[in-house]
Length: 113
Length: 225
Image 1 (cartoon, rainbow over the protein chains, first blue to last red):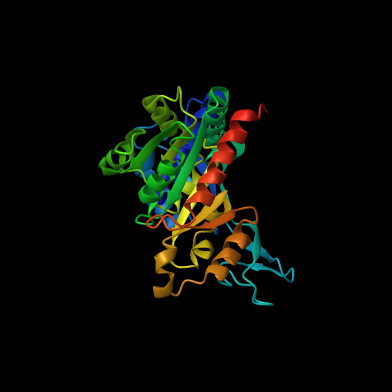
Image 2: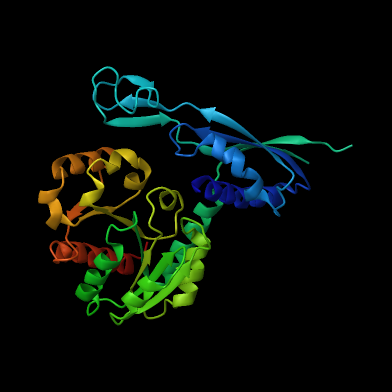
């Protein structure tokens, strides 16, 4: 379960932030998930309760924000949605791409006090 | 009434592990110990490749091996028979090692009087790519039966590797594996990755790989940056 490891890493990173910000309680976490990150949003949601079980995030909500996977073709410079185009340039057919967005697994914001 | 506020964080979920991995690297630098993170899918020949590598290098470098698996200690036993320090790490069901688990492993094996520690990561092309272990270099093995299209399917793994070993080249005649295509796909993901075809069973290519590794270890030990 790949998503469980990602969320466990997130819990550790948020622990540090919460200490620095002296947060007593956290209510919500907004996580940006890129379409090219390899993480499946529905799996992130379904294993979230297990990942935060018996941690200080146990009673928090997870909100996901999906970031589209936009790529630029290294051959012709076309920019396109890499997922919709199956990782292939729709203009010239090249598979040599540079991801412009969509690899994010980023904690965007935390709601707490 | 609580004053709930919204904090903008904008940090990677892996930020804590990445910081920890940098600390592991600093600790290794002080001790002049080189850590190699060896990754691949299950059955690609990690343990056999490692055995051949140890045979080549054990008179030139003091080597330790950390075998990470979800369960069992068969790999650590196989490596210990070669006369190098070896321990088995169990990940407790997790499909990767993080920097903290790696540090615990380094504690367990004891890095004093070692030049090179090889971490044989859990067989998996997805999760280990995301978790920096604190290794100085990352290596991965892709074996011929897996197919030449793997760099397209597991882009992150190939983009973080310093060297890609293409193992089991002795069975090339029996598979539709296109070596040129494979090199091209690796280059697309990572122009700096070095590709070395090997056969752990026959020993082909092991010299080139062992020499590369020894050079990296010496450079790490000599460079005071």
